[in-house]
Amino acid sequence: MSRTTRLFDLMQSLRHHRRPVSGMVLANELGISLRTLYRDIAALKAIGAEIEGEAGLGYVLKPGLLLPPLMFSEEELEAVALGLKWVESRADDGLAVAAGEALAKVAAVLPGEQRHQLEESALLIGPGWERPQAVDLQIFRRAIRDEQKLEISYRDQQGRRSSRIIWPCAIAFFESTRIVAAWCELREEYRHFRADRIEAAERTGQRYPRRRHTLHKEWLKTLLPCSVTTTVYPVPTSSREKEQSKMEQELVFYTNPLSRAGIVHWMLEEIGQPYRMEVLEFGTSMKSPEYLAVNPMGKVPAIRHGDTVVTEAAAICAYLAEAFPQAGLLPSPEARGDYFRWLFFAAGPMEMALSLKHAGFSLTPEHELQFGCGKYETVVETLAGAVAGRKYIAGDTFTAADVYVGSHIGWGMQFGTLERRPEFEAYWAGLKDRPANRRSEAFMAEAMESQAGAGNEQSTAS
Image (spheres, rainbow, N blue to C red):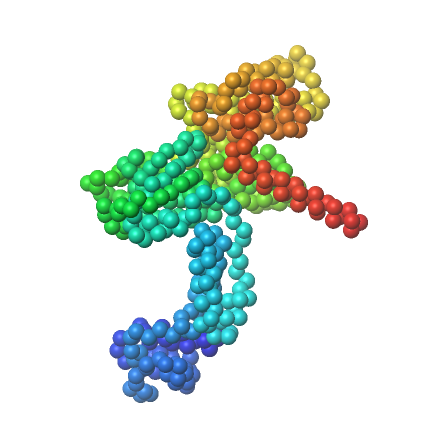
């Protein structure tokens, strides 16, 4: 234990005793000798600690003393530094600057030994995912502090725009998104607004009708199990509690960017929930005992959501749409027929027919009876008829089926496994520029570039 940490622990021990405490008791609590204790008490007095008492009588620390150089133990210092670095790299510009300045102030008051530990810390913050935001979060933080209403322009999952008056009460920072929690006057309930979908925000000059901490408590009741039923605001039902529980479970995505896992990557970006990505290599980590315990096939993609494991891209898309209904990727009941039909048409007949065609395998009439996909030409005609003149394949909204079908059509035309037809071109044109798809494509392009660079290095070395 360093001397700085030992002195800090002694200060903490003295703070816990309101009455004089003997040196022997303090030495036993700290696991040091009585001689060392007397020397440490003398050191604390020398730097301004008001410790009354003496050997044989006991010691007591006067309240109200703060010693900046001794504010942190080694573990606390690492925690504070890591937290400030996270804010510096993940929060909005205002908080990022404040975090950097706070970190500099912490370093300035630390003794040389701990300042060196802070500057040479081995705890790092990895790069986050950038989502463009039209509105600086600072306006929401100020509105929360001042208890002020805001008027915002918001674009939902389907691209529909609306104007809202909100009473912001909390901001949640996730790895892949930022959420503003607020009472919405339009919906007359607490709602969550993704910061990257807020296109404008202005102060109204009007205060909340209640204090912020009251709104915060009411909002928490909509998220946590609660037995109160007399509040004027909605309380959680069993289905809402289950939905919240699913949102809180860890979501792990097993992938290789040069595979069909890109479909699931797009889907995960659409649902807007935090997830952890595990990138596996073909033939090595993908066949490791650890991953085979997740998917015995040794293939990607796969996801683990809490204790639930789902494999196969179409099944994962369907699961995520139902697990996170707030993303709006599950169609209305009247459109479910088309939704399931074309989602699994693409996963079954379409994918098989395209794969056989790409491999140069032509089906005989006998094979057509044995294989469920039928002829390639029939599959193409059927798919063209399904998307002809339609923006989305199931109903009037974008769904998980569009992620799956659109991916196969886009990739098929790009790599030549699916012929280019006006119906496919028009359908894919309406999907390919979705921000979630662009983010997943950017990740894939970066991975391909890295792989090409590694290949060039090997060629040069050899």
